Amino acid sequence: MLKQAIWAFAGAGALGLVLTAAAQPDNTAAKERAASADDAPVIVPRKSRVPSIAAAAASGPVKSAGSVDWDAVKEEVDEAKASDAEFQRQVRAMELTRPLSESEKQKMRPKGLRTAAPQQFKRVTSGEVRETRVPVLVPMLPDMMGAMKVAARENAFSAFGDMPDGDYVEVIGTRMRVVGGTSETMSMRRQARAAAMPELAALSAPYEISHHEQGVDLSFSRFNVAYQISVYCKDPDGDAHCSGDEYVVSLADSLAILNPEEGAAP
Amino acid sequence: MRRALCFLTLLATGACASGGPSGGPPGDVLVDANGRVFSYRPTGDLIPGSAPPSIVVDQTVYDPAIVFPTEGPVYLNSQVYMNGGSKAALNGKNANQCDAENYNYPWRDNFCEKRGRDQYFCAQGGHTGVDIRPATCAKEAHWAVAPEAGEIYDIGTYGVRLMADDGTWYQFLHLQMSDLSVVEGQEVVAGQRIGKISNVFFDANGDPVPTTIHLHLDMKESYAPTNGAAPFIDRVNPYMTLVKAYERKLAGE
Image (tube, rainbow over all chains, first blue to last red; front, side):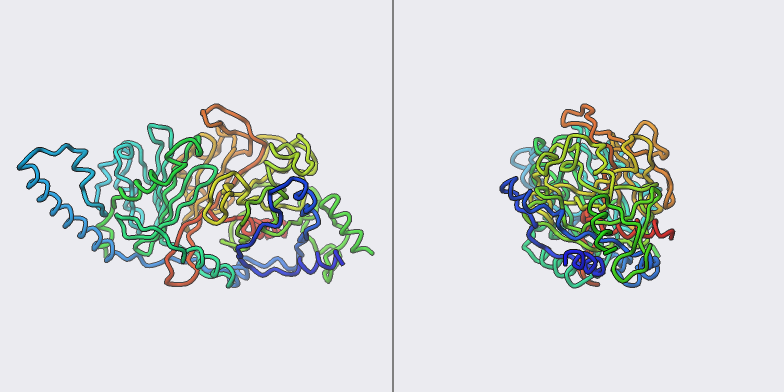
């Protein structure tokens, strides 16, 4: 019976993704040992059934490039420019009564997607930024200006660097996406993403946060591009940059675009 | 009877080269360079005690065309809960990371393994990738290779990061960092050697603390359930992608 179950399981190759309770709760070691999954089925693939790459690609989810919404980029940038102009008028009016410190101004400054030149970052080259068709977003916090580098492919980029405090920060973005899969795959992802997600103030984009053994990730989607900001810490539990959400959200709120002109390219 | 013997042999040794699965011809199995029959446990079936309360059982093959990211036979299983791991005793395992049980099939998923962190798809999980033991319990003897063409965009203290042309990101941890075969900014092709699998790791103070000999592989992928849905990048479970790549490798494709 058991062996039949094993071979039957081996024959079941459907792709799927389901959220499920783990087979073994972690309340007692005794229960865990009793529920040893050494009794669970083992799959022995058949050589004659290994599909070719072409056959596997035809039956699985599809990966393709999406079309970047450069109009939305321009709209976002223009909105930030207008907000900044209004903010400057307000600052001038307030400074008629007393001068404001830079930190006060920073706190009051409206959030939004601003533009920055690659040259504003000590280690970023214009040539690298020009390699990609994806809006390159990089945090504009002071520590980033001397540390961040950019590597780019046509469909993706990585902005990354070691921070003075020992953290490693990375922003990645791609217009590529895997679409589809089994109904379980799609259902699970839809359910996860349908949960109320907070929204980034600067980008009007909902986001998700994941804490893991290396640090913290913040993922969001904007302009039909998928982005992820990662902070890696030597001590993810002890370093507030990785144990909490505040720092990674502040990075997201400080993002600037390095290649807004790409949207105007023929 | 032969199937029963095959099954018992499989459980004991991970090998069953004498006959094929039910319905298949004898020998219709995938055999590695050491003569062992490849087998694996289903995705999401973590070793007892290592799974967080709820996990995603992700059977998605995110890329059916990648090159398997190591040379030679490999054994995918937990570094923490198997022999030699810090929680080996939980399942009656021993303290010897070179125990033969670690270097055998079936493979076992360890994505989302408990680390006390709240991953998006597995609260109280924390393990962001899968751990892969090389062919033998010898460090700096077995190669990790690029699964896809792309750029080695960053080399850290114990890891190498690859951005593939198709917008997949890979992270290779615990390589022999003093003798990598790539440099930062280098273009690589699929199958190109990156570095040798080792045990390089650092503690929270930045002091070197060797881990077990293994390759930790992370895979980041952008996914949208349907056309028109917003794509999000996640650290996805590479387990089934690796299973399929290994099958093709053993099948000689």
